[in-house]
Image (cartoon, rainbow, N blue to C red; front, side, top):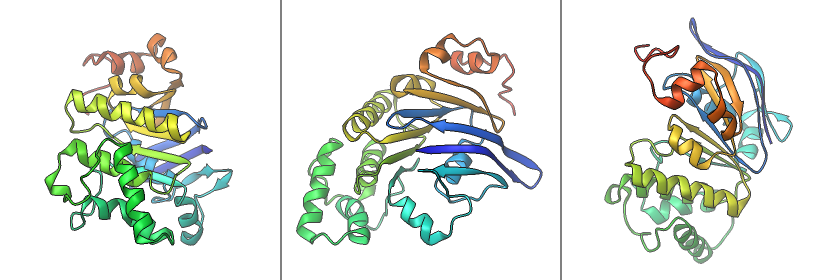
Length: 249
């Protein structure tokens, strides 16, 4: 469903993505891991069509979105559900209004049908009955769940997560990872998770890829990562400061 082919992107003289090629398996959870500042979020923005590559392509359903017009891109985006790092909720809207927003923009459902769907989605993420609360009145973990509920609104075939557990304590991080796994199993969606949380990656991933300095340095199933002897992978998994990854860079 998602195929990345020789994708490159530079900002001035800094190469952020360097001829990346990667196939995202359909109907599974793929986690792209790597240290901060290695291009993970830039890659996600290319998959969303928010950035254009210097060269290479991103294919969704065998359609190259890299040179697509905005009107055609918006049609593709209707099939994508996105959970941003900070949940990206509208602060001036209630929780219920945030989740209702995609229905109001993209469907012709009645208000009664929309609010019924909102209630179902909140129940699905374990937050029944908070429709009238404002985002400022709920915790960070709850905001992430609301963001996931909104991402699920239009039954997307592809779900994208940008650092879903950043800023959360270990208990809430595990809860969010379990929720991602449950949602994927129920929906059958193709999921792509951007993360530097190696523990969380092993909890949810069917497939993993490691991005370092703009290149995919290793990819495979979690068992392959566990058994990998590649120094970059080994250092990142073990959390060591000594090795090819310089923590001061």
